[in-house]
Image 1 (cartoon, helix red, strand yellow):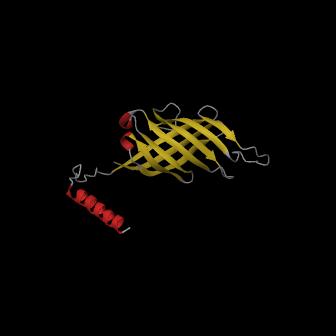
Image 2 (cartoon, one colour; image 1 turned 90 degrees about the vertical axis):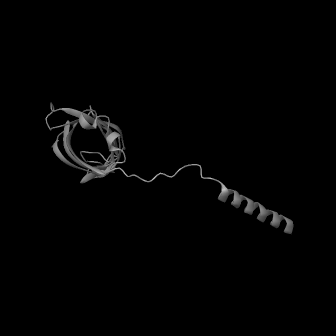
Image 3 (cartoon, one colour; image 1 turned 45 degrees about the horizontal axis):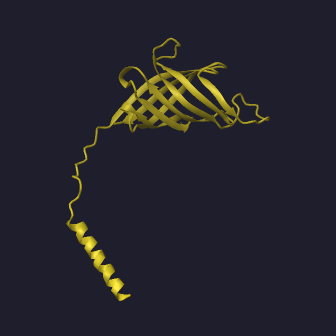
Length: 174
């Protein structure tokens, strides 16, 4: 038993000596942080019920008298425009899902705002949040990589077939 213990200590000392005398395999580079950018965006989402927003599934609840049924999952692919008018310039689209889970039409959003024109062409902002009064920006792609921030929204028009929402994003990115 004593011979095994001595052999174990000899092996531990050899391994420690090898680690101390070896060279590290890479060079350490100094950290050079990129400047933090704050971008404010303003645009409008145009939604057309049954065309750009489609109900995927809905809970079978017979006692629900709400205009927005509880436990409804909706897929969205809505255009983003520069203004509230239907013929204003198209700058991108919103894609994702919305879970209507509250009895007061509250929702949880899993959506991405993609831009396909202008300065932010090819970039997008990812949102994952409950809907009132704003949304949390949790990431992005392209120029919005590692983005955080908030998106405040204001309903401009809501009727049986159309929804127009005004968005004001404040995004912190690098």
